[in-house]
Image (cartoon, rainbow, N blue to C red; front, side):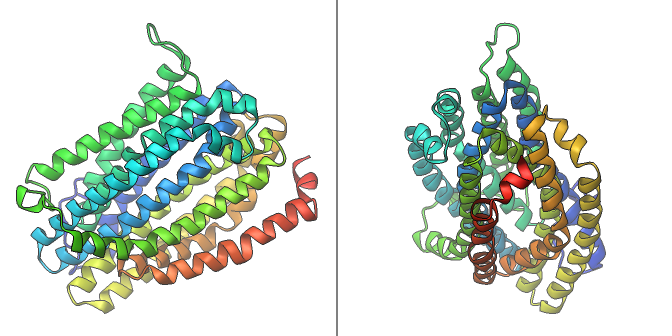
Length: 424
């Protein structure tokens, strides 16, 4: 029933059931999204350290696209959820269409700039000339195809805001299934298909995500989904776009703060060589695989907050946040124990050895300790976002990442030279 998505309005009835109905497909959706990262790095790791480092350096910058996509998605989901809660599906479709237009405009600009300056981006991030020569086409494809990232996040947020999380989940199943099939074929070659190396991973990912977007658009325009876009919705509404942009700016800023801090962290890591970057890249992919399901549970809280506030039930919205946090705590505590105990075989699965392996194991264990705090933090942030308050999480992120994390990272790794003690 949860996977089939037979319910879309969660403003009444059992909260436990509502969280379950929303969380199951959202968690499975996020598992599928995180599989993109795990599958890519598994096949790319067979190409050598520079290939893995290329993915890591590119990923640190492409996360800016994810930040913008997530920020826009939060605004779209909040507006759609509120309109559905108010019983206004036509206005929800209006918001969805304007969000798509806005996303297309932004991704177009990013795609052109990223494609043209791909090699310069890798150089600025500390990549060697050998790495740039080998990996610049991967970077071009990832930025050139960023529209698929933007649309996947945006349209899935529309489905989630409307309470149809199962449709968002099925979209990622399709996209990831294609990526799993195409990755080894394009990276290593298959029959008449030549081996494209690390570039093949980017092409496979773009094709997979592109197919997912086509599937989304089919359901948005077939007049059968909870939010259906018709000709009457397909009008350029500057006032609504401006409203979406204003609401999303806080969310975009919120995630840009975190993303920009990650770029600086990777730049610090590049000081210590490609092996250290490769180790952290593998660790980050494992982290994403385990933390995104928790993000799915947090998205469930955001939908419940938006719908119940729209229905004039703030107490129910608040209770849904606390319940979701408790469920998330149990899940994250279990995952953190698994990561600590099995850190070495998990990192080693990706063909890591030597310094790459030791770096990845240390990073995975240290980061997993913070999972218990992530559990409440993610749900609370998404609850604010679901209510349309993106300013509070933005302030928290700024203090956490820029006032505390980055200065401490530079102090410990470079000034106090802890990197030598940990990595070597």
